Amino acid sequence: MKQFIEGSHAIAEIVKLCRPGVISAYPITPQTHIVEDLAQMVANGELPAQCVNVESEHSAASVVLGGVAAGVRSYTATSSQGLFYMQEVIFNIAGLRLPLVLTCANRAISAPINIWNDQQDSVSLRDAGWIQLYAEDVQEAVDLHVLGYRITEDKSMMLPVMV
Image (cartoon, one colour):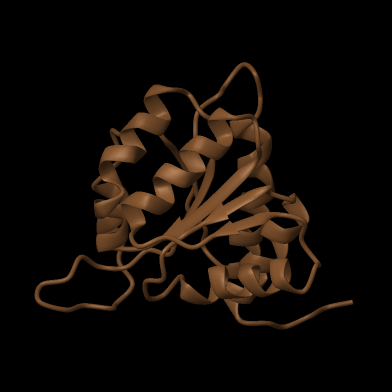
């Protein structure tokens, strides 16, 4: 049956089906609805996971680094300056070849404030050691999250994936 839902909600639904055990993210427009939905799914008992509240994007990335390093499928999401704030940990995750999926809801880098769609954030980290998958529409973004987990957890790859 076809279902029409807002893109962030669709991403949350597919991430739930991928069953991460650790979820951590800090809210930033436009990815906030993804992690809000996932937190609600955890609270409702629909997703058996730990949803870790943190004080920053850097901490969110550190939490999921710890999760995947301990062998638990993990997930995070961010956007724009949030991705830049995660940058130190982003390089560490790739350098440790940890299997993580991160959603980057592409947004321009603020100057002074900008919430328009733009790929400046993810493209700026093109050499960080992550596989980056870009979606043309919501359905493709949903599909790429499933593919992202398949790629990142393949023992011959073991590189993090940013969708």
